[in-house]
Image 1 (tube, rainbow, N blue to C red):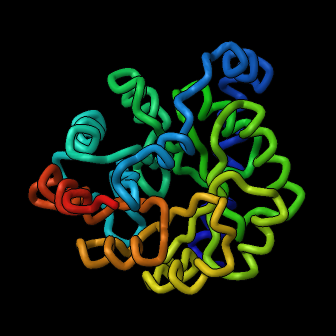
Image 2 (image 1 turned 90 degrees about the horizontal axis):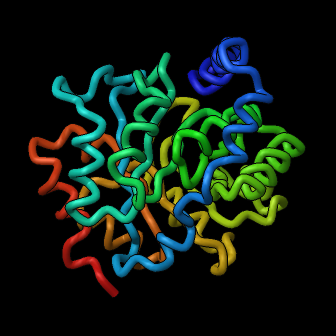
Length: 264
């Protein structure tokens, strides 16, 4: 069993417990009473910076453990917003990444106009309602781990909740599945979630297969201005960067490094 399969299997138990603590009907009522979130897709399209930066609040990873001893999700998000990030991704998985849905709540509370992506292993509509209540503008859907019917169901529900569904792919097979949803947003993860190897060329190779009208986000493996330039040359609309920002000695400077002199 790969780490991705293991994570999704564990997620089933988490969802059951979450529903026990807060029944689906109560959560759905809360979500339906929330005001519309910031439009994530429009924010990326309006960004002067190309590719726009989606900076990730990420506390830990299964392979590296805790990424920084002084981790502060609010301070990190504010640093990103003040140094050129267009949007922020918040990793909310607790068991494997030491994240929390509370991180999303807290960041939305201090930066209500900032587009926020819930980075999570979503497999149940309940998690989309959670995302809406917590202040998310978008939610991640991993094509490789969702059968066609469920992926389409979750994509449609996200749109109904006015969340931007980001369908993540890693292979041409994933991409074909994603395109059947008529997606509003696509992400190519350069990290193979089965063995955690990383290749920035994954985005470059899949780019010609993706209609130009669909905003494209490159995820993982982005560390330097040269990487950013490579993505810009491939007409990638946005980039999601996590660990290289979180572990930087000066996160503000690293954020600026990936955004400065990066205009079309």
